[in-house]
Length: 147
Image (cartoon, rainbow, N blue to C red; front, side, top):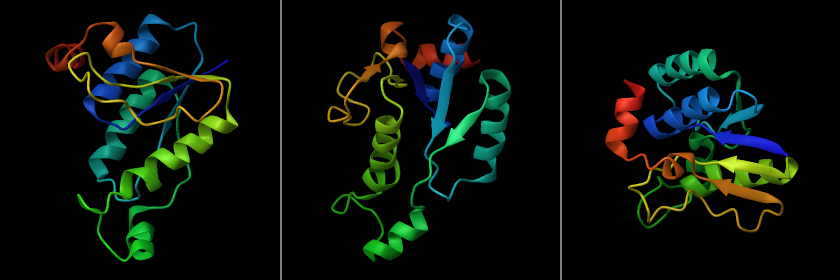
């Protein structure tokens, strides 16, 4: 069984990764990210610091935001919602297919009941797990944990 954690660099996925690495050091997690190609320097600095705490973070090859803007001849917006799907969800679903069976860890909080964390129901042999929800952590808890 592969243990795969998705890291965006935001507070929730960061808290999830640190929480899992600290509470389950016996599990060999594979941390992955799907960069857009337009991340600011601060994102890279954060990811380097996070990597020192949790181990390697592997980028998944995907089209960059610039490539997708050219392909669609448009900026993503509320009517043209191709960005997350083509840069994040579809490449990650392909990655999961190549690494199943897997347990996939998603950094959604307990106060985000309506969010699903991507639709990976079509990926066989993959179980989605929500460690922050299981721990009952809301936004205030995540901020306090990271402090």
